[in-house]
Amino acid sequence: MAGRGQLERIGKYPVLRKLGEGATSEVYQCRDPFNDRDVAVKVAFPETFQDPERGRLYRKLFLTEASLAGKLQHPHICQIYDAVAEESLHYLVMEFVDGGTLEKYCRADSLLPVDRAVEMIFKCTRALEFAHRLGVTHRDLKPANILHTGETNVKITDFGAALIASGETTQISSIGSPAYMSPEQVKEQTVDHRTDIYSIGVVLYHLLTGRVPFQGANNFSLIYQITNAKVEPPSSLRPELPPQIDAIVLRAMARERDQRYPRWEDFSNALAQVFRAERAVARKAQDFADSDRFETLRALSFFRDFSDAELWEVAHISTWRHADAGQALMKEGAPGADFCILAEGEVKVTKRGKLLGVVHPGECFGEMAYLARKDNRRGADVTVTAESSVISVPTVKLVQVSEGCQHKFDRAFMTILVERLSAANVRLSGV
Figure 1: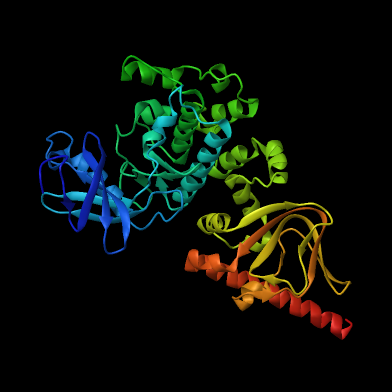
Figure 2 (figure 1 turned 90 degrees about the horizontal axis):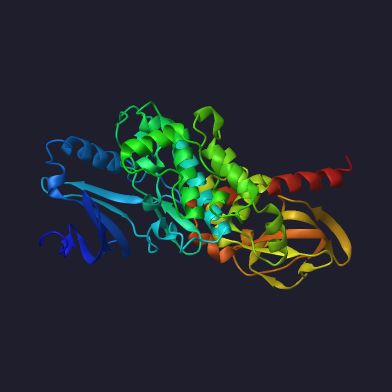
């Protein structure tokens, strides 16, 4: 290997280009020839671990992040595939995310539309709730540690400073970026998931306004403000922001932990409700936000046993549509290669004019396309009887989801079949 910034190969990974560097490491886009994919490889500078004052700390941060390889499996957490620690070479192999970090959207001249910023932070809250359930508190949340791809997809990265509740790690002081730290963190007190809630509140503030809520000439001034000053609402810098946004940010950033959102789920729900009225209009225009899809799926009985990660998989492979009363969704005898779950409203199923049943939210129809796993002729007509939102899942896309997600579909349909057979037996017996 050549000198710093000129690596041609890292272990078994050919280097494609350098992505950037920080104080302790540099990151390269590499090719993983064994899995036929691009990866990001973060290489620690050799002198990092040799630093007489901070060397032990940097080694601990590296090992903490390496210990999470393969464990935080969530669509909005950057995956760590491999970790290598050799005598003179330490590196992490991670998922490659093509959009860079959120830092570019934190300038006053390049702010995102409000709904996009809220959507991104919603996804962060879901990912961080997942991490929290596994006993992981990130402790260094900032725009530079949130990658993005596409319109609103995000990937949280850099868990080196994470506090892991397994007992294998201890809390490290003086870790994190002061501008995004909670009051208890800058005072080096014990922290829990609510310190991450505070930090994500600061990230949202920065995305919405183009500046952090507290600024100081030095860290001492900044820490004083974080622990004593009042947070000005985001609308004081961006007047068009709705009152709900101010309320959400200020609660997430409450100085006292007990005044913040107690759970990530509470934070997520608040974000999901911000544009509820506008999204009702958007649904009629066939525009469903990802957060809207996720919250809807989570509330439906069909998806009761699906994990968060599996719900995101369903949200990404499905198509959603608004349908008015009287609209035909399926015609008897017509080909069909998808099945549907009703999200809102009501539809009726008829065969040759005879009513077979009424479908309510959380129930499915057209499931023979799934059970047969091939193009299928529809066995009945399906017509909307009350304004509806319909989720359609093409059977060919099921091969794209995880085995766990496919298994959950199998279980859901098995339960439905048993219930329908039982109901049919009751009708036939006259009981």
